[in-house]
Image (tube, rainbow, N blue to C red; front, side, top):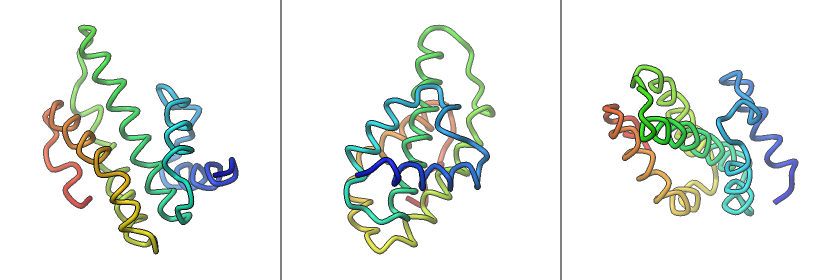
Amino acid sequence: MNLDDLTKAEKNLISEFELSLSELPSSDPVRERFNSMGGLLSHEAQTSLLYRLVVMNYLGAAKIARDNGRAVKPESLVWLTQVINKSVDWSEQAIDHYELESITSELNRNIVRFFESFGIRNANQRA
């Protein structure tokens, strides 16, 4: 895995969502997980992976805020479902789609659980 892979995947994130890694609640864990999980995946699979990690980063930050007594409105998180949908689109384009889905299965389950904990159902239905 080289830094260029992350940069290329981030360019897609910026292009599609006007969102860069520097804007995340905590970008270091996303970078670390991307580097450990992305391996030899295709660009499409890496983009899909990055999108899922970004969603989990936001959901994790929201859960921490909620656990610390801050009110988190589900409406403030619904936009993340669009990121998940695009992640699925990228995954479907990937030649290594099945490998990606295999290595992200636990991540996918966690995303669904976190969405559901905020009352957002069927958020990851396509994945």
